Image 1: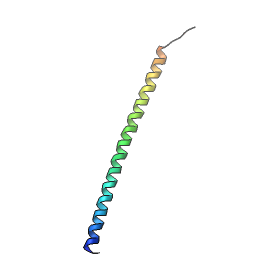
Image 2: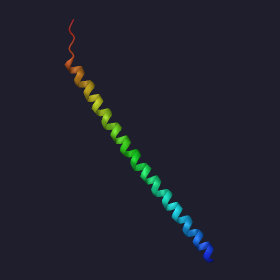
Image 3: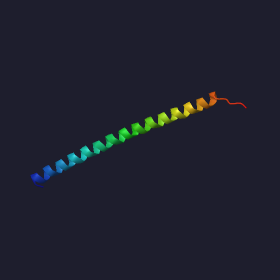
Image 4: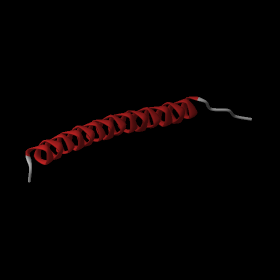
Length: 59
């Protein structure tokens, strides 16, 4: 392998590693967003259930 080929391969590996790290960061952020949305949804359901208990309509 010539020097130019080795430098090109090193550059390619570096770029691929950077791309992979970016994708891993995006996955972590998406997981955090989904966890937050799930938690907010659970809180909303709890609020609706609590409101339903407080409201007692009798004919």
